[in-house]
Image (cartoon, rainbow over all chains, first blue to last red; front, side, top):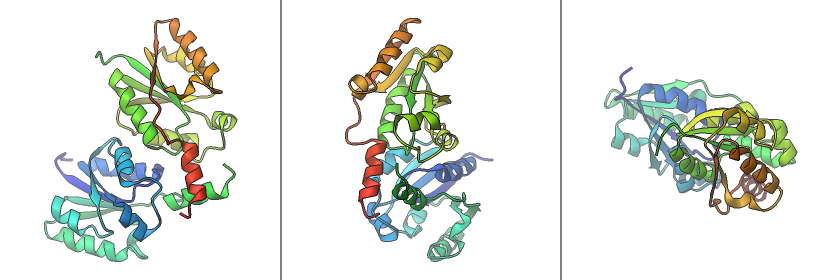
Length: 142
Length: 142
């Protein structure tokens, strides 16, 4: 596979777990991986206060093998960053086909069409998410 | 600096935070970095049940830039792994000079002497530890 392709993955990137790593392992095979990390405000609007602030989350993710660049995604919408970086691919877990993220997904597909980009959806890593990690910590005597 | 040096860092490696990354950034400058991750039993004996099991923690840490190898450290003592890998350096935060870890530290120094290895102690990243992250999650409404 040509290595000058770029692939974009947007995420909150809070409390890194093996679900993130599984996604990154798949993504980096396509070329240069840009991670769009949600700003603190965007995480708050979406779920909760982030455990780590943007700067801290950025430091961690830019040190993952295969991550070429970390950029700030300042809203749940990918549009601004996609228009800026025009990636050949966007990668996301297939969990967003239903639920609140579906509108975001549609917008990504529409946007990518402008330059022939493609959305890649990978099987979501089961039983793991930052919300579940937080729940586990809260419920367990650890 | 010669790149065929090896450097060993032992850690629980649970809930990765920017303190881990800061240590790894310093460590990888010395050469091939081997991370010794505590087994689930060793974490339990030391602090608490790990949030992520050994296999999950290994997957995350072997995907950090500059980590050449992840091996299991099955007790708080570094001795077994040090005798096996004979690293040129061991790196640790300077926080273990006092408290319960001091005995482990002394053993590391004694062990390294056998092949002229050196202990490198770096300034501990303030206000961050897995225990603090857990405390923050438990106390915050997130």
